[in-house]
Length: 231
Length: 388
Image (tube, rainbow over the protein chains, first blue to last red):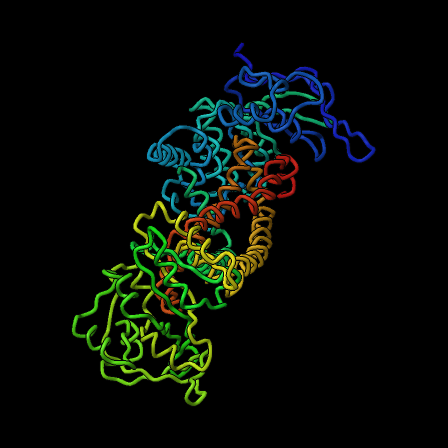
């Protein structure tokens, strides 16, 4: 069996809101193999975004073990987690979250500011990432000058530019029309199949989930079942 | 440097707001530059290249109180004093009070002997001055300012001295020659000077005859200045007119303090300006960071640490404050020639502008720190959820 890029053991996450304690994830076990494309589905409040945040190193569990790309995330402090994220994970958000005052190329360069690459090398890498997602001709355009589909491609280029092992996507097509959504999903599929990127994607959309190699369903903080997609 | 394009773009996210904030800081630093330069000039008076061996003797209790002319003989006898002269404050202006003229009644022989080599004046004009009782030697800059020519008869109004003959405050002089100072600092300080005969002044005034405003002494060895000053003051220790002898530079500072504590007034104005600026710029920075909470959360998501985000916000604040301050200080530097016209006799130095850069850095850090700490403490999950 292929080595697991994501491994969760007895992971629980509890939030305290006022006097109430809300258990969002309960004793969760999960393995995702390197090179897998997994869709996380479930109703609102089922805990899928919380699980995604834990896998992406944005949050830490209340209990349990999380190992991603060979690193125990539950043992890292915020500074070490930040460094780990910059090296191993690329994030794609529903609303793209691009910097409105920067053009596409500058947006894609952002993660590279944390490296020691020269300005010319950063620019070259950003253009290569934009070329990979098919939007190099929009490199000098600001987010306000791009369509939703184009903006999401820029966001994917930003997620890819530091060559992470894992892509974490939170409703990447939630703000797009069907055609743009399919284009973005095809792109993710290409990145998974041809470039070996492991992808974990949260989605409400069953059609989007079909692009993944495996679908995981969650409800009330637990994984219900696992199934393979035909895509 | 690699963050500069990012910081610059972030700064201009809201162009109008940034522009107005920038302009406020520019104006504040223009004011800072002008007032600091004036303050520096008043607190660091320059006596020029020939001032190091010059002592000034005034009344111990106030420079506005006169001393007896007869003290000159005793001062001359002090070992180490090579020349002594005397002078009085005339307080003159030409036609209107804004046209200040430093009309200086001087003893021709001793004054020009003590200041030998300080002035450029032709032999013919000096001869004409010596030969004309009502004659005046006028600085070339002053001649130009009022359009005077040699041969003109010019009336000056004294704010202090009435004439014995008719009680009038108006004194008339015949311009017999011009002079300029060799030393550039002196040239600037002497730009409003008109010399006339002490004899005319002393005989013409209706009171205080035989009194002088202050004495000037040239000493042979500047290293002995302090000892000589003590010896001079010791001469008059038990007289009714005790003296205070000090280096010319200290005298100028004391003279300027007559106008009040200029430094305190200027610092009070600047304090009020910067206090207001602190709130204005601080509010702009807070608002700017508040609007960018999701963007800052994205930066953290991408791997920027809490410390990096803190530094980025402070750097943005510094960029705004230091850029605006440099523009403001450059404008005040450009305004120095205009200031010099308004403050004749006061030497303005661009050195006074240097602390402005330090103030700008301090301002940038102070106004940037609260929003930077807020950005540093930002919880990624909560901040991203806020956007959604």
